[in-house]
Image 1 (cartoon, one colour):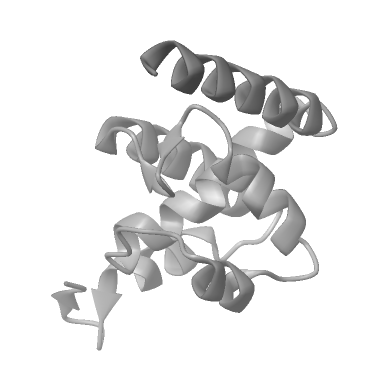
Image 2 (tube, rainbow, N blue to C red; image 1 turned 180 degrees about the vertical axis):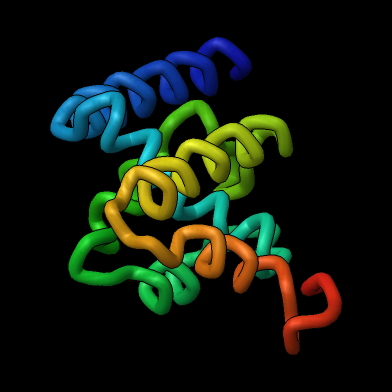
Amino acid sequence: MKSTYRQQKKKNRTIIYSNIKKLSENEILEYVGYLASYYILSKVTEFNDNLISGISTDKYSEENLKKALNTALFNDNCFTHRTIAEFAFAYFLNKVFLSSESENNLRKIRSLFIVNNSSFAS
C-alpha cells in the first residue's frame, strides 16, 4: 500500500512539475513571496481555495497562485517552513517595494508594520 501511495505522489509531483514549468523560477519566487506576505502579515496559516480567490489580482492570478502552492515549498497548502516564507517575503518586499522608482518606499514598507503611526502591527 505504501508503494502505491508513493507512486501516486511521485506521479502527482511529475504532473505538478510539468505545470509549474510554465512559470520561471523568478516568477515562482514572486508568487510564493506574495503568498508569504499574507502568511506573515495577516497570520494566514493555510491557503484554501476561498482565500486564494480573495487575494488573487490581475498581477497575481488565481491559477498561478495555485501553481505556486503546488511546489515543494508547501505541504497541504501551508508553508513547509517559516524560514522559507520569510525568505520569499523578503524577496517580494525587495522586488515590489525597493526596486521600484517610488520615493515613498520606506513609507510603504513602514505601513506594513506600523498601525496608527505609533505601534507595530500585531
